[in-house]
Amino acid sequence: MKILYVTTISDTVNAFLIPHIKFLIDQGHEVGVACNIVQEVDYELTRMAYRIHPIPFQRNPLKKDNILAYKEIKRVIFDEGYEWVHVHTPVASFLTRFACRNRKDLKVLYTAHGFHFFKGAPAKNWIIYYLLEKIAARWTDTLITMNDEDYDSAKKFKFKNKNSVYKVRGIGLDLNKFLPQRVETKNGLREEYHYHRDDFILIYVGELSYRKHQDLLIEAIGRVKGEIPNIKLLLVGDGELAAHYKELVVKLELEKTVEFLGYRKDIPHLIRLSDVAISTSRQEGLPVNVMEAMSTGLPLIVTDCRGNRDLVRHGSNGFVVGVDDTEACADAIKQLYHSKELRSQFAKESRRKIQEYSIDHVIQDMKKIYLNM
Image (cartoon, rainbow, N blue to C red; front, side, top):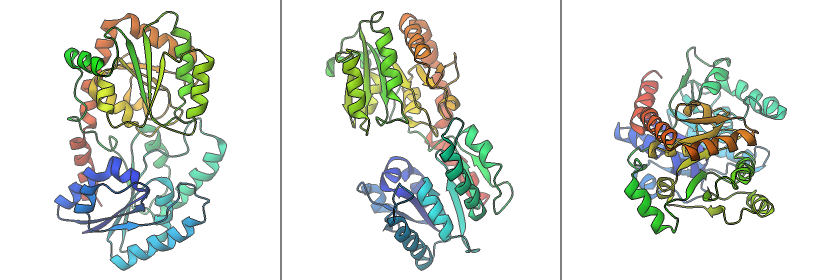
């Protein structure tokens, strides 16, 4: 079988899809990849893949380059004779499915990492993205979702075939990469990174953006700083709101409490030296940062949005607070600070629950879907 994986940008392939592509190649398929090469394609993929096709997809659907991208992806699919096309990310998935719409000899799969329409989303998201997905469903053989809300929404669309919607447990996590936290290792890492053993360290891994909503967490830290003088917040990631969030930290006089670490390659170490993982997002698909923290065995505080609530059960492996509830977030931080027993209970449950999200389990889920195509 000749299969083409399509994403808007190469970063998505590098970060999430290499194990999936490797599985298909190991099964004897020829797999090509089409994307806008923003980040250099991982060497392992260039070595394995049938071909890498540069396509000028743009994340902004209104960019003129997407017209050229549509023509180019259509040419690649037809000229190279691909039999299956597996699309990811909104812009690339819509343009590619549009290009494939009249091909009866071609199977089209779409993995939705998180619809842009969701409970609480702006009205324009529902007007634009819901309509586009509803239209594109008619050109789709199989749609794969990653959370309960998206799964329920997708089942309302009309697809080429009945029973075409599936839910898988994310993109799969390498549990060997994010090892369980041990006291000795934690203390050793704190010494290496110049933190004190008695620091109460929170970590949030994610781009500094409106979607990730770090201001809620920064304001919550401002509320608890007087009660927890040894608290530290590590914000890992870059983003368009970095300057704004730094100004907020200065305004709240938290310069010695909140650290902006930028883009990092040592995230597993940073998680293992922390006490609590946080996600205050407004919107998620199935958040990898939360899964990584669960694999390490950290208790969690997350906002009540799609994806977060699929992974964290309130009072079981963490606390789930309102998307804009600064007070509830602050109270959750204080509860975990004052109860080592509660932190231990949540951590143990996180480790138990994350096992079902391993890359091995997800690959088996995908294998069953492929067999039903």
